[in-house]
Image (cartoon, rainbow, N blue to C red; front, side):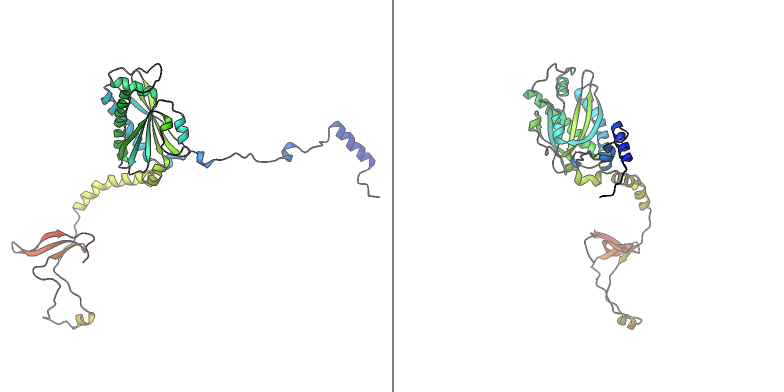
Amino acid sequence: MAEQILSQEEIDALLSAMDSGEVELEEPAKAKKDKVEVRPYDLTSQSLMLRDQFDALDEVYDKFVNLLNVGLTGSLQRAIEVKQVSKEIVKFGEFLHAFSNPTGFSIYSMEPFIGSALLAVEPNLCFALIDCMFGGLGKPLAKVREFTQIEQRMLSRFYNDVLVELERAWQVAYTIKVVQKKNETKPEFVNLVNPGDLVLIFVFSVSGEEFTGNIHICTPFLMLEPFKDKLSSRYLREKDRAHAFRRQLTSLLKDTRVNLVAELGKTVFTIGKILELEKEDIIKINTGPQDPVVLKVQGTPKYLGMPGIVKGNRAVQISALIQKDEGE
């Protein structure tokens, strides 16, 4: 017979405790399932650190706001205020989904960048700007409708004015050439990049006395990525530092004394022949009286010249500049 582990009294006490609830029949939920909460992480949907990779864009669009304030005020002949509203990185499909039909779209290139970027103007702002161009106050329409052919031409002129200022603003960071390629009014016809590709969005508000609205500048991330080193904060600091000291260095270099030597000629000897040289020996060189001499600055050949005499002093007249790739 198997050995009895619990006595009858202990068994009765255990059954009584179970009936009264003093002993739990199941493990606590925490002990039963002690797991860390796991959330899905989609690398393609995470916003990139814009300020860490493209610091130059902040300077570009600060300059752009200033230029656009002056440019639109002059072209529309009324006080216009432009402000930067936001900046973010989103998927291109999500960006386009936010616009209705019609919207003012202008696709443009930025050489030497590869690809195209997009300028989007909200419909209410489009109609207000068109009204201003025809001498109105810019009051928004009660109901949005399709653009007429004349209105599309007027919008094309507005897009061009904005892109001209954008090209000028980019000069603070990188020299580009902006070319307007195509205008559209329907989001479904705007094929800039794949819907899942990331794009950089800068939003600017344009306000007048009777209207306000936003324009959006959409630049694909892959368009700027090959040039991100030249659009970083470190590159900008180094460029500004070099520019700051350039004038002082140029002024100092003008007063710097250097050693200038006119080399009449040269030849090659062995050590043995040099040791055999005696007084009144003649050494032949590789140039004659009609050959140009080489002028060296601090030992580096820089000029060719012809020897002569000026006011009783020996002199050399410079006749040519020695290029870097020219050997001796």
